[in-house]
Amino acid sequence: MNLAQILVAAAHEHGARPALHRVDGPVSFRELERCAGAAAARLRELGVEPGDRVGLKLQNGPEFAAAWFGALGLGAIVVPLNVLLAPREIDERMQASGARLLVDEPLEDGLEPEAAIADRGAEDPAVILFTSGTSGRAKGAVLTHGGIGFAARAAARALSLSPDDVVLGAAPFSHVLGQSTGLVATLSAGASVAVVERFEAEATLRWMTDTRTTILLGVPTMCIALCEEARGVAELPPVRIAHVGGAPVPLEVARDFEETFGGEVYEGYGLTELSGIATTYVRGQRRKPGSVGMPLEGTRMRIVGDDGAVLPANERGEVEFRGPSVIRRYWEDEEATAAALSGDGWLRTGDVGYVDDDGYLFLVDRKRDMIVRGGYNVYPREVEEVFYEHPDVLEAAVIGLSHPTLGEEVAALVVGRVGASPDPNALRAYVKKRVAAYKYPRHVVVVESLPTGPTGKILKREIDVETLLGDQASL
Figure (cartoon, helix red, strand yellow):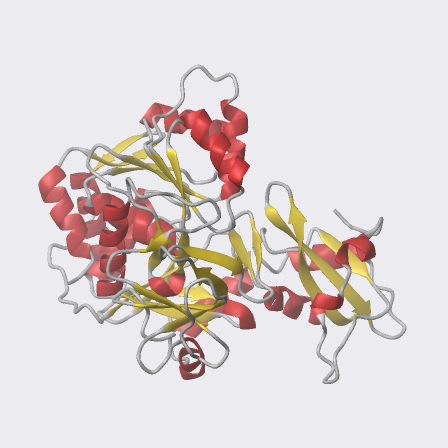
């Protein structure tokens, strides 16, 4: 049950057909398999052995796919890293995983491809994906060969993927959606990926048309931007499904996309800890505005109250999942594992929602305090920690502001130390250098104090952000 076998099988069946479309030409299934074998040979030459962790920091493309499948073929564990992460964030994740090396440039492929695929069981670790969760502390979710394989097969069935499909590869391959659905589900179905290194609406729309893209995996902001670019365009891609998640999809956005492109919008819900898509729709299923659909085939879902009791339909509580794709642990973090997983394997998502009488899931609140900016999760604690490293900062609170296209924008309220006069622009620049581009606050406001509770904890819910921002916002 080594995931690398999926590429081997696909190459055997689909051979010269395109696995990946890129601007300088397609890469066939057979060629991608050869590149993965060569990458495996190069990694072995560098001393990588089964069980070793290998950091992978590459843009979307055949280089990432070859290194990902190649490392798995050796029996190594891949640690994918978003190329937008700052150096300190890369170092933290490399150290936390104990990675042997970092692959941040294409591996040499002139070597004789490694033919053997290491034996791996369904429960063996395949990937460590870091997610900060609500605590802000980086946690390495351990995704298994069996878990990713199960999630990918279920996603392929839900999207009814076939060799006739072309899936837009704009979701980062370093992200669970980009790997589980964008790569594994797509290639296992014999479909191809239209690779996008960086989403820019005008160029992406042309690329989708050129490659005859049929499936969009994205976030609401992508749908908005693509619809705007499509105004007055004579030829559009034959999109049949847009699977959209990462933030709530406004009804008018879904309607506009469907009228523009003719395909259906499936609002879904995904989790790193569930190895990919958690809930969505399937072809022919009645869609309900505001709902993220139903769990994928083989996955169970329930809503529980604060006391842990399972709640009936239409009552709000925490959303939990159980099934083969749920992670079993976080990497060397028993505390985080115990907090997220019940003794009988139920995953506590931290998200609040309810299930209606027909079994459709409706999300009410995101994870506590989490900001979703353009489909990227920003965990305030991570950004606040950087503010606290500045010598002029006494207290900091990072909060999400509503934004018409991004969903939410990042804002920070800062209290200076006695005798200090923090400059908002300087603070923003300080944080910008130390976190990923989507995380730093575009608004920074210096205030005299922040509301606190009896224990001294900052009470964000009592902060009137819009009023405090006023004209002080630094953009």
